[in-house]
Amino acid sequence: MVGTGCQALRPDGIGFTRVSKTAKKSGVRPRMKKYLHAINIGLQNNLQYRFNYLTRTLFGFIPLFAMICLWRKIGGAHHSGWTESQMVFYYILVAVVDAGTAVSEDDWQIAADIREGNISQFLLKPMDYLWYRLALFFSGRLAFVAMAAVPLAVFIFCFRRYFLLPPDAATFALFLVALALTALLQFFISFAMAMLAFWLLEISTFIFILFAFEYLASGHLFPLDVLPSGVRQILFLTPFPYQLYFPIQIYMGKISGPDLWLGLVTQGGWVLVAYGFARFMWRRGVRKYSAFGG
View 1 (cartoon, rainbow, N blue to C red):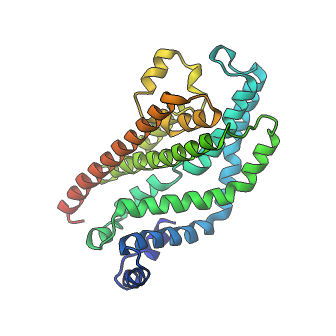
View 2: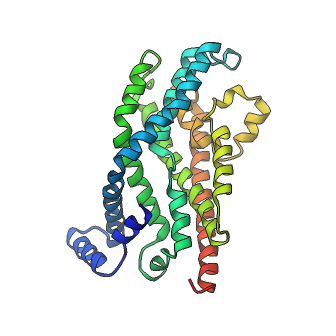
View 3: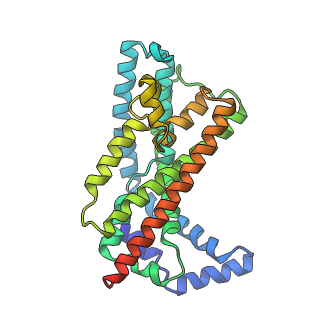
């Protein structure tokens, strides 16, 4: 899938010349047109793997179903202010947020591009590799949501008595903003991690360590409220709670007022920090790559 996407979007002059001419006629900036073109091609490539997306979605529901059954059995987490219904609803929202924001194979594909030398074309042509990969990330999420919509709807239907709509339209709008920031935060962190491929031949160990920590610290396994307050406060000094737990809190109405706005500002700040770190890793990596004749 990596090779197909890169070959189809190779900035070989002819393809991007057409894009530039089209952009001039339509009044859209050529640079933006290139990345919209990347999203379009990415959607076409990703939709070729519909069966993979479908099976991944179905198997992804297995641990969530197990956690729901567990919390229903023990009757929720009343000592942390969570009822059984709220806990089941929380895991439903975990599935929803994951479908729209999770980084699936982007870090592996970026690392493969570096190892195989595919990034050389981006050092010579007028296309920013980070924005190119971000375009492919969003196209992948759109394709995944399209494929996961039916099984996700079935999953929600099975637990429909626990599912609630957001309190009001404003809350839902803020949830969507937090969801978009969550997607950006996840991508930039994964991109920065993938840059280790400039220095290391195999980065799978680091990716798995990061994934394991994210799974616990972002609230995938359980709501962070069930943790001791001291541990929870430490976690909120990291970007991980803003990768899943925070947008779910908004949707459920468990955070509001000044705390909500402070959380959004903090989440946006982490996005900027992650972006800056991703840029830093890219520049250092390219410098090393060029020094060795890449």
